[in-house]
Length: 167
Image (cartoon, rainbow, N blue to C red; front, top):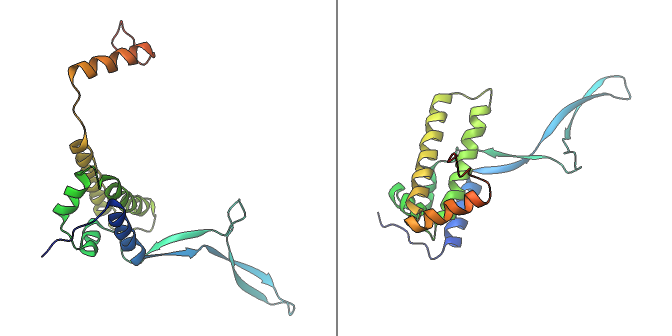
């Protein structure tokens, strides 16, 4: 499989967004109300729910669960390539944003009382979180001893650390 190349982080982010848009829809939130008609019979109506701000409420519905595998298939890349992009300074923010969308979906599934296979959702969430932390650690710039000493001095001066106790 020939891997796709991305010209810019903006292109990569837009293609990630295209994937999420292709498997979801924003739908209005509605509720049912009953009222008595002129003939005395009860009539059921569906009315939009409005937020306290007065705007009609909407919710995001997924037709297919968003996954890193699905995203990679849509982008035409492997998971390994996605992980490499997430570690690169150029694409890290876009990859983190894509992972955040998937993480939000998984968190919502865990809190859904009607959800099934919660253990699988928890495992997916843990795996995604661990991968994100690993990618963040790979981007970290190591500090020299002089930089550490300067940081500690600033923390002591600003009261974040007690110089006598070390905490």
